[in-house]
Picture 1 (cartoon, rainbow over the protein chains, first blue to last red):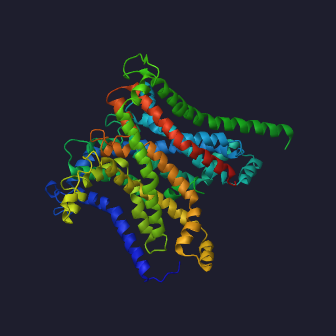
Picture 2: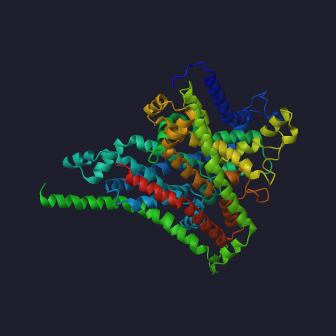
Length: 273
Length: 302
């Protein structure tokens, strides 16, 4: 594309792009704007806060702060565990003849596309029977279990791109198949692991279905379920609610902005070659 | 390598691989095979989830569902969502990708702006959009009034006829970034020589789009439509947090109905039957897609 920088078509293109950015950003701006307002200023949604306040955030931290911590305690270990378990399954599968592993692919993909609602009722009763209802461990368990298909699928595709000669060279040096996985393959796959981790973090962090089904108190409730309770409250206080929404999404936004490249790689990985 | 050493190595490899596969397979069996079987079993019973015994009623739950307009309304809503997802956010994402893929200055920032809503949890999307949709003092009605169109203001989430479409608008905002990103990366992977050659041959922009751009975006299209298709069939979060299925169940989808039937009215059997129907519907839709993808992976050069 060698269009002249000031051609009218190009100006139009910039104009539409700017408009699109504005449309996508306005809801976030309104949210931030509202979160700094005192209650009397809420009636005019477009006005700027005349007397900016942090009171909404003080309330939000008191109300959803503990559940943000719960969400972190749920997300980080369950993502780490599911990536590890997925990689362990992916390693043998990546060494197999692709013609023979067709049915394994089929199973994994089916697992990825099953609507989670179908397992909601058994998940509730199994977790309750195990004594893990309303605990962080219960959520670890479901997120790891339902993360296995996608993690295996993703890492299998990643491992398949690692040259086979690396395995043979390690073997000649007396490195066994288990040692090869932990000492060579995993460290060499760090970009794939990072990409998968950030994509998985988004789905675990944002999950509402399992959060609502398997927790009931501040002891384990992740921030999505907590915020959902506020959203549906009879008397909604919009200032604190918007501040709570900001706190809910902030950790994921920070992670996204820090690891944007890995995130994009992860979303496209394995599927769109 | 001596013969026995090689066979020892092979045995060791088999054992290690089996050990590596054991845990993931156990998880898969428990989380999918056992769980789906359990749901199927419960769906043949009447059970409140508390009493120690279930009453076997055969296909009674399914027969009741088939006779309920509430159930068919949710099925229809899921199909509406399916059409919506396959068309609106996908085409929006494609158009945005075509727009931005012109070496614009600030391309990185534009990408981030459009993609940002995709990171946001659906429940937070609901919190924000309920505020924008507020009949008195919400963004949309304020803007319409300011533009001199007070007659166009709506009770966006409280009107039975438009509640689903209002939730769809919020969903568009939060998902278009995904299709945008996939199509954008797809566009970037098309070899530039193809465009140059076509231009030398005198092809106009319209022909180039239909003959070169769109066919080369096929893998991106497969990914976007597949993920959006299943999203439409398992839709829960955004509907539940934005309207709770209301007003008076107008925006209900199968997943929110299942949750309501199971955990608000404790009809576990009937709720399980809804889940099984949902699985069958999703399977009819998704199986051809999975078969297609499995073939494609197999054919792809290693």
